[in-house]
Length: 77
Image 1 (cartoon, helix red, strand yellow):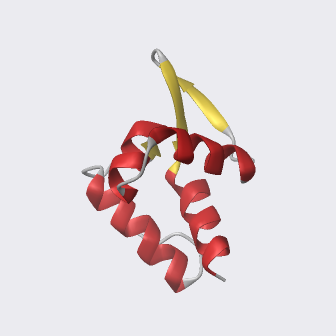
Image 2 (cartoon, one colour):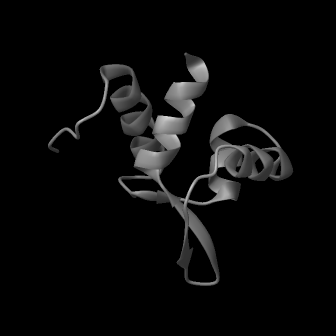
């Protein structure tokens, strides 16, 4: 798969999330909670704090992996 233009550390996070989701490019709050091993309420709060764009997907909302990986990378700095 071609690499996106992002720092190597962010690319690692992106790839790890993508592998966790079997190649998907969108993630919802329950999936992210499962990935991090945290409560969904904490994840929703974190998503809102980072002001990530959410996209309507079927009966819920999802977030682009690129945005999530960027927010995770920036919070590590």
